[in-house]
Image (cartoon, rainbow, N blue to C red; front, side):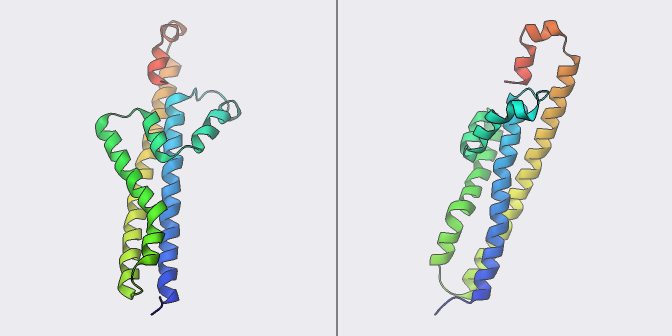
Length: 158
């Protein structure tokens, strides 16, 4: 018995959406690392070489660069694990599953749930990145040159 092409199409579409969210998670992690580690007053051209290197990193490597507290790091690792199951396992497991409509229903529903979860993580990450940038801007504006000389800016831009 072969799979109904419409079932495959349903799963393809949901896999595509979930993969887009998985990629957005990596971009959000790069933006968090950028906000933490770079002097955002410099032009993007001046910062691009380092950002480009981060874009080549895996989500797990980016998470380790963030130096998050344990509880947050565990949550990010869990989201990355789910992202990896979508990116690396979902299609393979679906394609070897039974050819039934129930299998397609199960996978389509699972992919919708994973896409939703990944979008929530991306939204939270980008909100954190915006807050980090705003804090860094305020701190840099209010910091005197003598405070910078004593390394106070290192705390804000580790």
